[in-house]
Amino acid sequence: QKEVEQDPGPLSVPEGAIVSLNCTYSNSAFQYFMWYRQYSRKGPELLMYTYSSGNKEDGRFTAQVDKSSKYISLFIRDSQPSDSATYLCAMSASGNNRLAFGKGNQVVVIP
Amino acid sequence: SAVISQKPSRDICQRGTSLTIQCQVDSQVTMMFWYRQQPGQSLTLIATANQGSEATYESGFVIDKFPISRPNLTFSTLTVSNMSPEDSSIYLCSVEDLDSNEQFFGPGTRLTVL
Image (cartoon, rainbow over all chains, first blue to last red):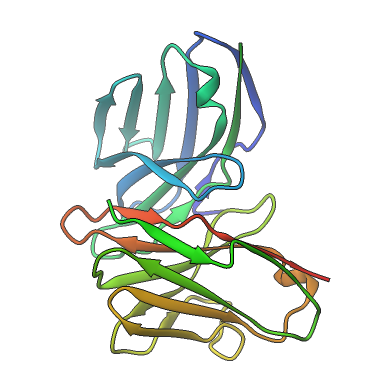
């Protein structure tokens, strides 16, 4: 079983829709959870960073962590064409700066 | 967040040759990391480079293939040695903000080996 599972299937949504992305993981030691956004031919850009379980909101973005289910989510409200990118989930354990990544989800927001 | 640059941004190389990738940060950082991003695969950590000590390699990666230098707190290099087409990938460096534990990435080096 991979440490982090993320369905890489491309996701196309109309502009203004809610985008829902998720990852599951197997390592119960993971405490820090991140979402990165990666535009084509660019490096990953840190979007959301959360510690342990709970929700975090930043503008149109909401990150949710459910440690009991080993499941994290990212929601993008009122999606824009500029949100078209690949979204990578990542996580790490306390005291360990090695990030474990999902494969990434390609999102296309259609005007 | 730190501003990170990488050189070259891309290269096409012949098998059997070596390529050195440079990573420059605009501020002093303790921890620098090198990742590989292969098509359809997860970002994978190659090694962690701390200034003044030997790099720490992850399982499946060895120093002879991926030698790393870390001469100061703002710079690191990764060399991909004796390249084969399987080394075609994007190579990324990242740094960690010790206050927030957040990691930030450079723009990447896109390597194609023929």
